[in-house]
Image (cartoon, rainbow, N blue to C red):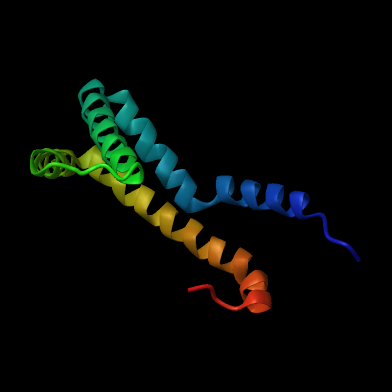
Length: 116
């Protein structure tokens, strides 16, 4: 019996949306967005994070000043309990997605062997 991979992917999407981890992430995200101060702080943090990632991907050097500013911003946002909960929930969701990716890629790894 042939399996439609797209149907399986949509089933997985539904399972993610129904998971406790996603529910916790959504709740933490909604709490941050409901607090104007936390929302602004979190958006600033995300902006800095994306800028640094973009520079890194483009092979640009990141200055010591930018690194220090990012470290200060991280320390600041981690002091906010709402943002800290959101970041913890994001980390848990990211770990689950990475584990699911390993499972999904297992047939290809078995076929080709591990690359690297």
